[in-house]
Image (tube, rainbow, N blue to C red; front, side, top):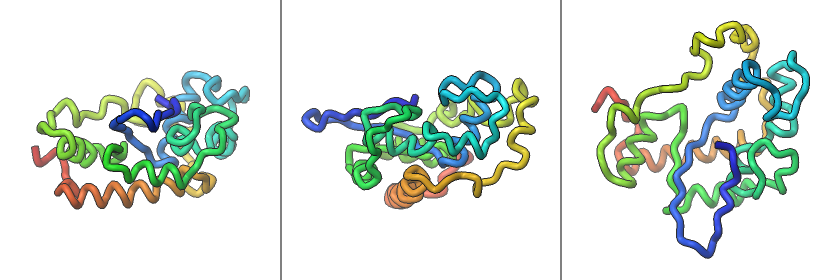
Length: 183
């Protein structure tokens, strides 16, 4: 979901989150929007390009906003998402996170933190982004899309930092490079 975290600092809590490469998240959201509707983006042009889409104000700073603002991801007014606070949050010992594109390592790390063994059902990709045959008629919309089309926003900066923290945690727990082939 794309709701704000809204943690109450006076209450003890454990956070479990998954972050996604902002470029791949945007591609996925664009494809979803293309075959559903544009209402989540409050855009009204059915022929919107990927480059126009990722530059909509609602698309910027989504993940940082969910961590540090009281507004949901696609809100127009995100109450000044705070990248410093977001970077501090993910370093807390009660803040577990994984990375969508590195799912096997995420599952390994999850079980190192919380116990148990990885199960086959946890490792299935049940919702592939662009290989879903039901929506092949929209795939041409991504033919000329490149990472360079993404604006440098708080999410792209945050994600680079999150990957470093994630890699450190993987190395500490022996999950770096772990693959479900090892189960």
